[in-house]
Image 1 (cartoon, rainbow, N blue to C red):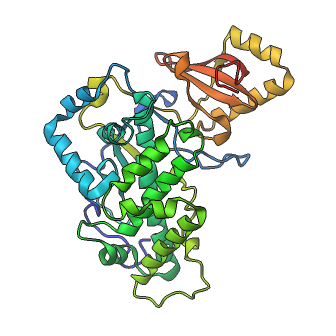
Image 2 (cartoon, helix red, strand yellow):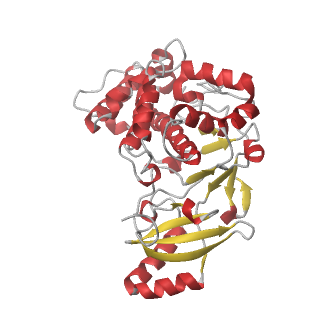
Length: 394
């Protein structure tokens, strides 16, 4: 990229819904398994040795105390902040709650930035009426914001691919040519919202069983500004989404001043994979400028891996009853957990019915429950059985 004249600039943040004063600060994320308190959301490669794919997003779990109310959050944030967030929502839609910083600039840390207050306020706006726990609403809001911003990363990479292929700067030219009066590219925002919506329309494990979140999110996007609210046109089918991505790619190339590419060329190919964006290649930061974790007792868990698990006597007894096939599968899943918790085949997730710090993992047609001892930063396997026996339904 540095070799393409004009591709990278020493510019301030290109989309300044929230430029802040410290865009490159180190972000707090709980990683007790790594023995450190501060880190960005890093992850291993999207595939492990056996080719098993990583999930659509990191296993980030926001734990909200049940006694926390919207009034508590509003009191801490203050009326000025709430008014400013509402104003930004009117002009920037979902980008009022999080933002993406391009790697086409040198000024600030590139990647997805999600302030904790953004996830809390979006949950209250988009999912307030859903019959699910407030904690689940906040987690859904976090992943909705993340999916929208990850599309901007994919579009950033698409522009870079054009630039590397043609040795011609395109990203900034396209931004300058296609931005509207509010400073954003309407078609790109439509596609970012479409990627977000499709994640909820065709959910994988992180967004499954979301209690009506998909139609709620669609209603939420329709109320957003120009571009953002057009997402439904592209989210409904694979063909429509592909067409929208092709149009965005062509839009970038046209802004370059180069001759149009031959009609036979599929400009969709400049995207690495617009259907499953590789989040492991994009820095993801969660900020907490209002100290909400401490004031509200919020935990943010992100476990990249679980290197060791102690099996309790109860677990060993249950496992011994299940036979060699399940026992071998358990060893396989433990090996995968030691590499990454984000593999789809693991289905690693918080198990709220098990109480504080309880999690569950797939073991073939069975399910195992794990518990984290935060004080010791150690994991224990509590029990294993069929999905139904473990309380996960049929």
